[in-house]
Image (cartoon, rainbow, N blue to C red; front, side):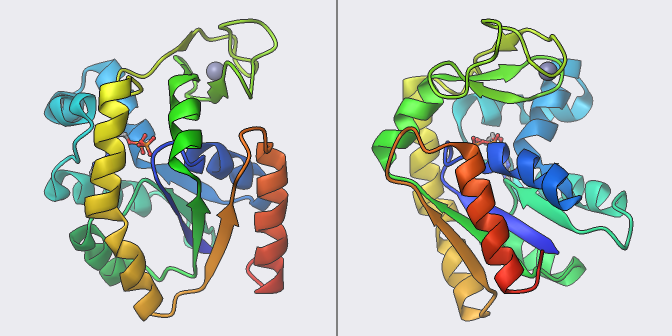
Amino acid sequence: MNAIIFGAPGSGKGTYASRLKSRLDVEVIAMGDIFRENLKEDTSLGRKVKGYVEKGLLVPDEIVIDVLKQHLAKIPKEKGFILDGYPRTIEQAMTLEKIVKIDVILLQLVPDWIIVERLSSRRICQSCGAVYNIRFIKPIVDNICDKCGGLLYQRSDDKPEVIKRRIKVYEEQTSPILRHYKEKTTPFVVSSITALDTSPETVVDTIIKELEKIKLA
Ligand code: ADP
Ligand code: ZN
């Protein structure tokens, strides 16, 4: 199964993708994680993308497309994958089409008020990138990653002004891609959340059931 997990910032893409990865034995390419890793290591890619990421703007297509190609090339032929954070522009979607076939779009629909609540209480593990939420998905020990013992931090783009910019960028530049996939009749699995306390497991179980129905899991 080759899937794109799609949704606004804070819609839970990364959280669900990491759980689907172990349940379905697929690879995940998470564009934001790749950029954050490079920022942390201060690589030349990190230095190129820093200004965009910190302002909540899209990194230019030619940089992103290059990174995607490098990471896709590392995935064994027989293994499926989930793309998280790619494509974010029509140009990125067009390029993807030339390289691989996408079987399904996993669309996350979440009201704005939930997004703002979630993002402002989100914390990330400095070492392994695991995602927590100090209100809803708490680590066992405050500020410490359950998986690796790393310290948790708040993303610099999870500040209220930057969150607003990211939501706007999503609405203007990224959500039009959905129309493109609908026209191509790519199957959609849609998860709609209306409560703040819906657990990731509930969402992931439903996604897997739906994928089984269309013989992709
Ligand atoms: P979100 O929580 O907003 O979904 P991500 O972790 O996926 O955030 O991405 C963080 C930032 O990295 C984005 O705001 C953007 O600056 C950059 N970025 C990630 N993926 C892409 C992409 N496909 N094209 C351009 N910029 C991207
Ligand atoms: Zn960790």
